[in-house]
Image (cartoon, rainbow, N blue to C red; front, side, top):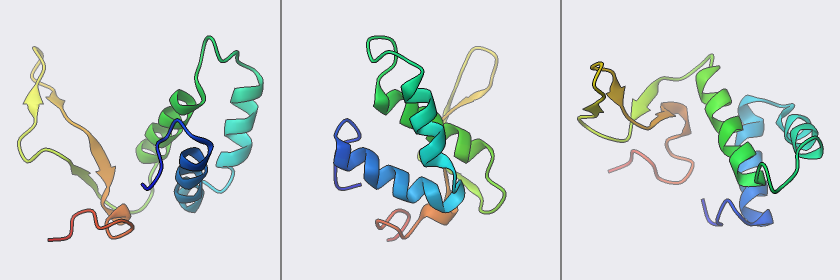
Length: 96
């Protein structure tokens, strides 16, 4: 991404990408932001939650990990950041 997620430009940039996977994302974000106080929930936190939702609900593509070998929590579950492999190439991710 070109802009920080805490700026209006950065949020718009991320919403443009999210809209490819969830066309109604702008309405969802507006609804949540209109029903919450900024002292309780920041706009970039709502955006982060939307990214997690879109990633979890992905119908196409493959999840890939940012770490080659993730660490594990005490229960043995992997601790890793995942992204949709279909996003590769948008900004050079995953390209050698």
